[in-house]
Image 1 (cartoon, rainbow, N blue to C red):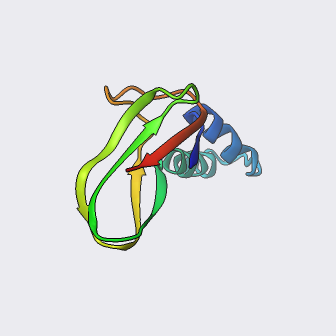
Image 2 (tube, rainbow, N blue to C red):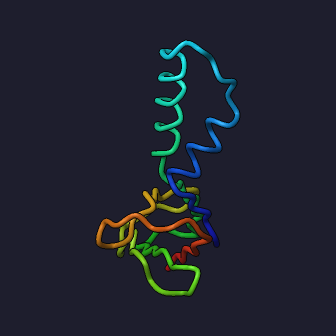
Length: 105
C-alpha cells in the first residue's frame, strides 16, 4: 500500500491558496494557525487484521529502502486498526514529499 507525504511548505501553500485574503491581520493569523495545524497532522494508515496476533509494519522509500519501522511484533486484535506515521524516518528526520510504501507483516 502507498501513502502520500507532502512537505509542510506544500501543505501550507495548498491550504492558504483556498482561503480568501483578508486585510485584517488577526483573520490571516488565524487562517495561518489553522493551516499549520493541518500541516502537522500525521498520516493515518488503515489496517485490516485478519486474525489476532503480533503485527509489524514498516515504511519504505520510493526506492524501496526501509525508512522506519512503525510496529514491531505488537499484539493486535482482529479487525480494523490504524497506525499513525508522522512522516519522520527512524532517526527523527523529516522526509521529502513522495509516495512511500507501507508493509504489514
